Length: 437
Image (cartoon, helix red, strand yellow):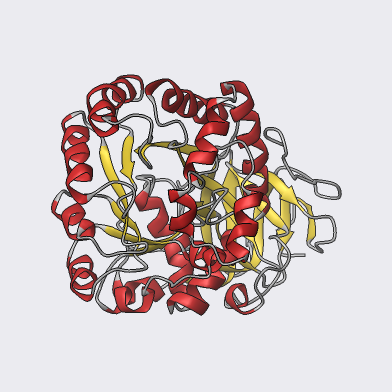
């Protein structure tokens, strides 16, 4: 069941399809089908000595103890290993072309990220590369990156446009993302980020994006999420609110990059406008932490950016203690977060944002699913949910944050099919087993 260019799958030694997983520590994420907030994020719905059955593309049953009836199909005894939903990466910029290695080295020499932007680098250097790349090439590049994301256990992800910055190229990016989604079993959701920056060669860029690009995008991709990067040197609060009012009128949902370097007031404005999420929040004010704790807007933390840029991290502990609903994501992009690893993101969220491992897992699965509007079928292990799950090579999920940046999950299932099996993983399995082997 390999899917797409760059797929890292290895299936040797594993009988497929897998029908039953037994003797597992199941992190079911059982509970209300809404974003979890505050102390709720610590409850992983753990089932010890658990079993899980799969029928087609969905989970058909779940419970604890040995199987008591004869079964058909492959039964894997996991030896107490942790099983949890696959990661949902709810904030990425994984569709791009070109290289940012020169800027990476400049950053190592002490040049600040915002200074690189002012010099025409950063986002604009990738914009120039994307404009020179065909839709088909962008899809191929995205396929390869999706394969790397899958390696780390991610089977659902959001991918933003934002490196086109004109109608033709923003549509080209979104079509490339859509093409990739048709060719893979992993779930890919596109987001319109024409307000990623402003084209310095287009003086009326804001007006043009709102009057021309946004309507064209909304017509071709009805109901698409509209995002913006609100920061000094990018989009102002007033400009972002103008865009969002127009996007709402066209039926778009709203998300925003805010408070990465400066607290400009966009978080509060986004809450007032009913945004699904506010992302970054490294510089969020105490008053906005309180507001997020009282609102339905989800706080999406992107600790990979703080790590890559050697900058501050979002106050995840304060947000959860205030009662906020928190999600985490890689922010996978060529400039400020060039990593596709959700396990590394979980570790950073714990070590740098103050989350407990249980909270980080909730943030990377169940809550991330609700950021993307897929919580009805992703982010939990229960009957009727899509059979997207991963097996960790450990018996305690806290190892994700403790022993970080290690091997990928040895077994990953997507829509009930094995998409990753690492040959050195030792699972006991057989056909027609009535008891765990």
